[in-house]
Length: 254
Image (tube, rainbow, N blue to C red; front, side, top):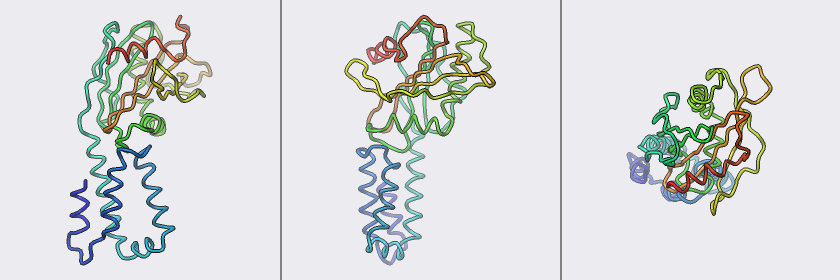
């Protein structure tokens, strides 16, 4: 990205834009540090450019090249999110059902394996977080983006089909909605404080829930995120909404 930035600013340029070279180089480094990555850096860069008189003057001189270089870097960042991810790992007590999800989108790169255990469907999803390489804020921002873009709905179809095949439910996998349940936003599992989101799975046209869904985000530096999803039909004997037994089993297996 730094090499592309340099040549993009230098190529056929009568005056080298030092400010953009330094600013975007620092921005690339900050992708490893700043929470939420480009979701924080882009608004911050726009704000600095607006409030600085010198910045506004430089934008008049370099605006076309700056926009072209910024778009190119974003494209490179998105292309890097197609690089492979590690293979999901589950607990040895779980029963493996599937090693791929046919409903998952091609972008960003991901691997999803699905198990059943203790009357629940468990999926472990390793995926690229294209907007940040930092672990801080990675899970919360990625999960919220997934909800916004409808990615969780697409991936949930496999869990519904698995419930229907293994637990006797009859939920149409193409006709459901996920309703987010208000929760604390995080929960402590062992010594780790992890981001969580909870949902109720409802069939279209019905007001009551057919299953409860817990999503747990496990962040890491470098742009790979693990999302553990536990889907449990309503009426199951398990009574812990935070699914501590299964989450701790997963953490112990890593």
